[in-house]
Image (tube, rainbow, N blue to C red; front, side, top):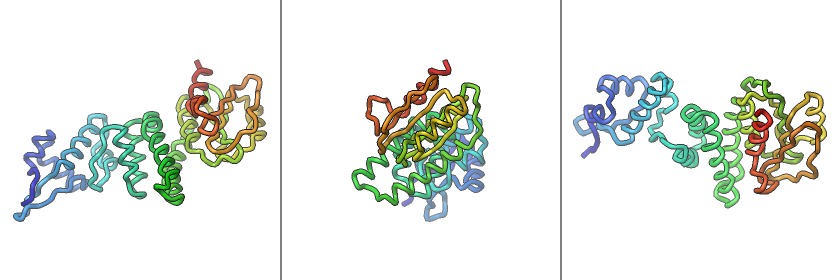
Amino acid sequence: MTVGLNIAALSRRTGVTPDTLRKWEQRYQILHPSRTTGGQRRYSERDVARVEWLCDRLREGYRIGEAATLLGTAGAEPTRTPQAHVHAMLDAAPDQLGPLVDQAFAVYGIEAALDRILTPFLHAIGERWERGGITVAEEHLVTEVVRSRLGNLLADAGGGLRGTAVLMCAPGEQHELGLMMVAILLRRDGWNVFYLGADTPLADAVELVGRHAARLLGISVTTAQLAEVPELEGVEVVVGGRGVGAHTGGLGRIVTAVRALAA
């Protein structure tokens, strides 16, 4: 016996008319009903959650086609909190991860998605790798999916009204996702960001700071060693990342320092 809700019950639960539910199902494939032996559709609690999630997006101003694209057609139950979204990303197959990152940005906003979803997600992935729970290849695959999404955001034109910040990874440092997130936040905050990326010679970054009268030099150190921290007149130098100890406050210090400069 097939257990579930008929379309009238689904309509009562969600407040969406049966005609609209049928259109959403046919046009966007967002519902995945089972069928009774007589061919009648029966909808699950997962279908209820998907309709309610769509209604939330419509109230936020999305069009139904946009909301359906964000939701996807795989039949997964949508998340309602950042923590649940992190768990969904950790459980996702590689081809599902990119759309979940896009969904996080669209639903929660860029700053909240970076702080409350991507940061804990990447920490969890790193811990899995350290414990041997995933292979190097799997870790690289996840990293590249996230890097591609961050790269799209980083490519957006920035401001410059608040000044110039130069961001770099220390010589030998290859881990740059945290620094990319900082660059995105600062650019959205109105800064002109020169993002230099992984394994940057310190002398080259310092020369760039002087040439463009930058107000801040941010250095990410996760696994590499930083021989010295330069002292530059009139320039805030902030070093962040796991490689310099918990007392630095991590890369968040860069955002804090830059916003303090702008105050």
